[in-house]
Image 1 (tube, rainbow, N blue to C red):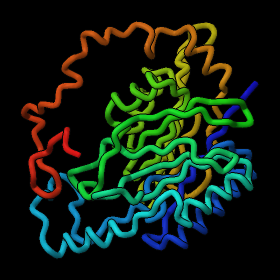
Image 2: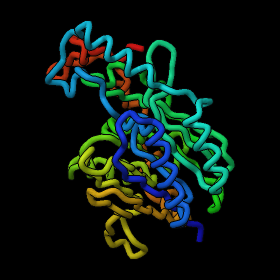
Image 3: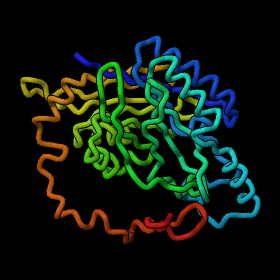
Image 4: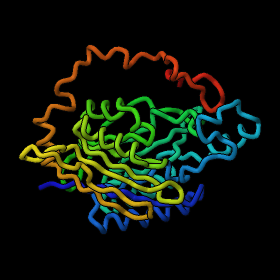
Length: 316
């Protein structure tokens, strides 16, 4: 039976030292391949270790107008962005080809105006087959300094288990059911999710739901403690066995320590489930969902971004 194995690379980064992060990422990819991985998944914004700039708002309780010192720190932070042709990304393209393994590489991506929070999926031949930029940027904090993405693309990834339809969402994206739903509608079978925040039972429960309601496999890589709290996790959507008994959809959940955690997805069982069950896109009524795409925000959900400006969901 075809099994697709995703390696969740749960690591602690070396701050903004991109050379050190490259070396560590290389070593973990090599270990993942030796363990039998088909895809190595990095935590969010690996090239700079999701390191904030001095003075940036940490959360929505600290919003306010940006000071000149914060503006200079933000600009210096944005200058650390890289592009797909820069040495950091090129290194992992060569590594993917050497190891015959796909790599989902995350980085602060250079972009006109302001950089993006990006994952590029490199196939086992060293080609970038998908680049996704985080749509739901955390504009109440650090990510107010970023340009949000504008789409949820899905690609066909060539693997030893055969072609697999793969999409991605990043951290805060997974807290919006629309992200995984759009990926499912675009044909995703597996959703890769880089992460950089504490994974506690409620967020993990959300993630389990994304798999179940969309009939997709989901895999998430987080930073290890003390940078975050680990708990990288993967679920399949298969909620009942052949005799209609409820089953636990958890594939793997890490502890807090650094490590490589393997998430094997049985593609035959996953696809059989998708062919006959009632969730996903089988019995939706999209003509009744108009308010879901309305841009207006009503109280009590009106917020300001990290710079103190009213949040506009249609901006940028």
